[in-house]
Length: 101
Image (cartoon, rainbow, N blue to C red; front, side, top):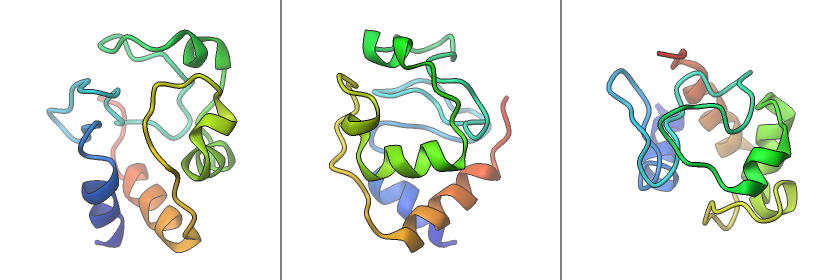
């Protein structure tokens, strides 16, 4: 699946997803779509992310994936951004297949 390839290449170095997912360098991403920012209990979020008060809906995720530090100035996420709309759509479709655990 294309979204899985994007996740493995760009996200899996810091994030986990799936049945045994845990916080790593970043929070686990099960049930991400529709979730509020900075709510998983097994990860220590930056003050910037805690105060962002976002809901990770489709539009917010697209904007964040394109430019994380623009959406949440001060985020600790080290990611240069993803500008390819097809890869973003593939990634969102993949993330959607993992409900909250």
